[in-house]
Length: 273
Length: 253
Length: 102
Image (cartoon, rainbow over all chains, first blue to last red):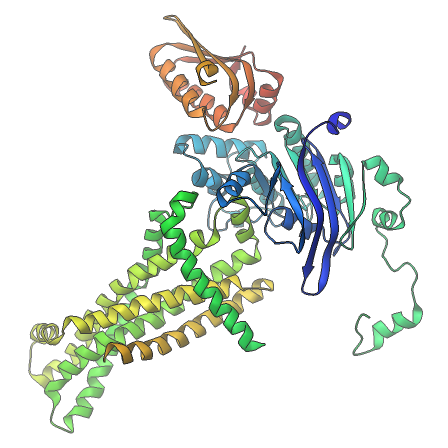
């Protein structure tokens, strides 16, 4: 798989993406190039801009500068209808699941089909329940999201995100907050979806085990910049200090300044300089 | 800072109103069709379900008016004018206002809470990435729902308030209840009822726009949703009273 | 494309449907109509999937509907020669255990 990845066409291309939140630069010239059938994991500490990058690729935020191409189309230049068509080829699984709380699990999964296809009710029912079977939630279509556990919510959200058979699938923290067994089930699901449906995926996560298991390539973001992109082996072998910190989960302040530390603990009006 | 925020939100609310009708008219072409079932559901939740409380309170307001008016007018020996005073003031002023306040408390709060919690739980983002325009899906149905159900509520409120007034006034006026009711409907002109109906539609729009705007601006989790709900009710009632005054001024010229 | 998309071989006992190319939202409705139509007139229907390069969920759903119809009208419905890719899609939803696959 990995060998012929380079010959595949590019499905996601991000060029020199810059974005601000107020005065603060969140992304500072990020590049990304993802091939068909690739699973790309984006890692980084909190505040590295990895979620922000995801929202920009999905067109939820407008960047200050830079270009984003999905499936060969510039998402900032395309018409409403073309964007709508493009969105049918994209599935997103949110960190919180983002299931519509007023609808049952089955209605959640069926919603994109109801809105954007002319399929009849019987077909819609079969497709949406089939997707629930895929994520191992067969028979749970009648439950409301509030009745589900954390892992079930993630799986139901995954079912909704693949209901239109998308070509691109985006995950925000698929295994965050789940116990290791459920987390590894979701990883297996991600892999089998790629292998059977040939989807390309972008997974934002800070879980190392899961990242190493599923990734074809990993991009490490730091302070809004690409720190490193490479295969799992390359990342593991990296001698870059920030990457090593991330892998070993060490704090950024490896050298403690005792005077400053004492100030942080004791001064009433201490602010970060 | 405060006024800047207020102007920004006012602009946002105007934009919601404009976008709602934009998608209503043009949505079909962009696969953003408004489902009739969704609108009917909103008429049921915001109109039909509010009917008992609206009718009960307007009945009480009618009685209260007749108590006060009988007392005030008896000084001039003009008790017979009570019927006219109640009929006119109820249809033109009291039933839209009472209904507006009740619906603001029920539906305005519910809309703000619903949209607010959907912002917090990323459901709005989920709608967007699926390709559903949030305004079309979340704002337009209650907007149409209230524009339809408010006038219907007003008509029921009018009848109940006049009935409440009748119940208290008939023995002083020496009339039967049915004669009182009939006479009330006789003294009303179309303009009286129409004034109340027009106001109620405006109030409905205010309630939805204020509820949705405060909902979309929610930050800070569950606590933020709670705050938004409270402010949606207070702000929409304030705007309703203000709009009522302005509308009364222009519609009684 | 659409001419060759579905091909029949029909005798009184068995109707064979050959599908080729890509099955997606644009033509799955046609497939569904063909399958259900064939099941109404013949006691057994066999869908040959050897020429299918890609099939989406609506195409799979059409075959599930065929099976549903066949089972409730005591007729038989088979799939045959699925490509590895089609088979893996069926396996993903564990439908390989539901269909009769030759």
